[in-house]
Length: 512
Image (cartoon, rainbow, N blue to C red; front, side, top):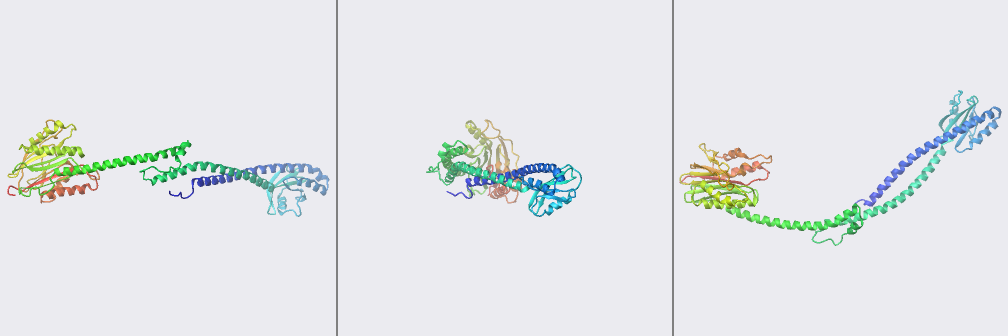
């Protein structure tokens, strides 16, 4: 079995939980810190304001009547309050009269006092101040007797705020880590329950991919138990997998049967193609001892077997019968109808009747038993090889080409004719032509003019006319080959849609 590369499902989900948890914990700590800082700062300011206001109000009498020691003793009592970093009093001459600083007064405090105005006011002011590069305070200034006697300053140490926030974050993160550990334990149990059946399904599918399905797998990796125990999507998937092997085995068995049947049919069609080809004259020159004619024919079937036909045979020493036809439809039915039609044509023609009568009698034999309503278009002609007289009957077929007075092959205007085999009394038109020595007569089926190119354009009669007159040498075989080559060039890679049949005869004259 192929090993799973990279992270497993468990590791991926665990990593996702860790990343998500760290992100949530970080964001929560940031917002918690900001909120706590704002709340503590507001509380410190309120507390400092109350202390400053109380000190200022209670210091009026002491400041007016007492000495410096009394004033110092008074502010020292408030310096020990939680959060209070310093207390000092500024006189109305901007001189610090008393303070709780140990040692010298910080330069930042002196600068703060120097900026303070001596205006009369009852408002309490506040501002942030940093002393000695490390001490951070919120300075609250309260006027003593509207500032006439000076100002009292209380500094709330921000370090208390920072320590409180740090303790709160540490406590919160401790709770968070505990919850994280519990979450990982729970996730491990849940993921293991999910991963175990999925791993079984993965192993089973990998085993199926290399199985030949001539027999069942010896190990189904426990997916039957998963299908029975799980009622969720995994259980449904396991149930589908448990049926998959049987479905594939049945499908392959059917495919083998169908393949064998198709091969049998293909072989039978190949035999039928060989038999059908035997119905048609394929070896040329067809009559090497007859100097009066040069004849050539070919058929290219669109499928294994087709419905086009051609035939030529001597009724007697002087009369040559020529036939070309196109049966409706394709494949085996058309081939059977073609074989029957060809046999009937030969049989009736041997009776020595005219071409029009041949077609009528063949129709009379085909129509009564034609339950499939098939039909065939036919051209049937009888050539007198002594005189060149050529009687031609039309059973609804394409117009042939014949050498004209200008030496070119031109389309012949045929008398009207209807399909053979489809109606009880068909119309069969007849015409008599005369072939002079070296004249060519060319017959074809609609597979020639209706050949398609990749753009779905028809080859058409105009192209047939042009390629039939490509050379002045009207050799029967060369004529057929020229037309076939032009059709191939025109069609390119387009699939052949219909049988292509051509028959050409050059009359050489009675003397050959």
